[in-house]
Length: 282
Image (cartoon, helix red, strand yellow):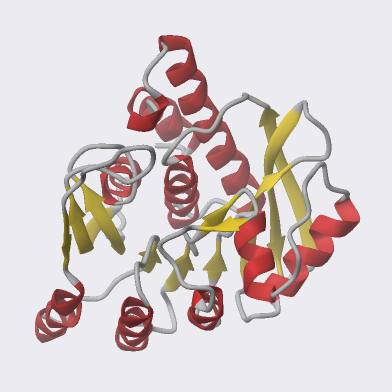
């Protein structure tokens, strides 16, 4: 039997609401990968559409955790980051990358900070430049279109898009230094929605689509990035890994819509895990 792979996931954790670590832990674990968590903050609920939540910042705990891990000679096959709430956390995670990066592992950065053409209100205007700097250390970047244009300091354009626009955008993001980029929120019409994937080593752009489901569902970016990371860690090629992540995310949305669940609470990804495991060949 092959040695079990291990990843560290650096995200906040919401005690209620499906996002960040509460999504990354079960999805990546389902792929047979050991997940070691570094919580950057603890919240009573996630912040999407909910008010009155509690928040405890754990920034000061991140590097002491790394110190202890290094004293144990722990190594990781991947380092996976999501929402980072401050410039200080960006700097600290950059230091984490330097300490844990090896010639054999990968760094996956989901630059969570914006959507629908707007930077999240909690971030100052200069935050995309800080996230861009962090992304220069990544092997795989998973931005949505808003996050991509903010890091490139370009104006946001409403879709539908053209292949020429998407392929130029994804190559410019890859020029930050990542070997692979997966761009989400891609659509050429109002029938299909998905992602574009680019491998800078091959120069190939591939697309993964599924049926468009109207509505905004919280936590789907984390579901997508976690499923993508799980697929990559099971040695699935980028194009197929992207399609698996699209299918898993859209299936989670479809179940949630059919059940009439409050969309603020997150999507039903749990029921799709058995199918995800089959797609991963497990």
